[in-house]
Image (tube, rainbow, N blue to C red):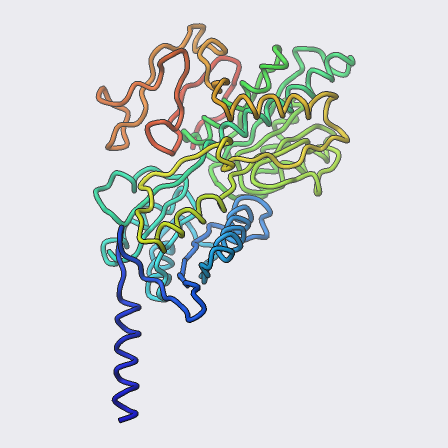
Length: 409
């Protein structure tokens, strides 16, 4: 009789674990104390030791865990580090699926094609590709994209950089023509172009003479290449360094040469206190908690999630007031408020030109992920509307004032 009772209990537990799916269903387990547990996989291109990109995702993971625990939702994470943008990503997604993860989050742009090789074999699992653009419109219910309006934060970082450059001009340390920014970019993708353009526009809003040189390194995370690019840009006459790359080496390179820096994904003032002014990052805890909460409650996870500074999804790291220009904190607060309430458009077409002309026409990606005659018109009401038609950036315009030193990637 006891054996029969155990068999029935096992059957009930088995049915509970198998009850899975998309909107309206969950695969979570409820405890006697009223809490619910969900298992989530997080596949990362690096590890937290990069103190940059992957470290920022780990911060988001831990923040979401705390937020949800206060709501009675326990998250059991399976975090897989140092996965390449190659077939090893397929293996990592399969591993997470076979280990019982009910949601699997892929954190790198290049992971998405490999993730999509797996998703049809696990229709009961929700797969999320961060910073990408092919999952939200692929016809599947269990694939999702997520990004944030990081260009807003980059614009503010540019304002901080521009104020420092203008201070240097006003104090006679450099001439107006020497206000040159060097930008270390991973690839010549829309995400990177959008980021350094918004940064440049922020800088030029307070330092009209500023120009920029961009060097691409062909990798999201190559500490040595990022350092070498930063040093090469300094040799080109750049007195301010910024980056769209995963490591802290552009910051340490800037400090080693006595120039200034603004960062990405983390506060880099600790490792470059005499160089790094501020940084910006996506608060992934905002999205992770929303997506996991929706799953637990049997609600749809958005197919293509995007939020900005107004929702707390884009944040600035602490301002290094020891080296920032006077009045920077007040200016940052002013610009943050304008971005949050929508009164400031980052890509206001009256603030830049393309080959000497005002931009009046530019396409966003169409539903197939291509730029075609059927794509959405992104320029209207005097601005290029970034990330309005999909979460992933699609700004690829090369504006005047920014020189690409290479474009092989």
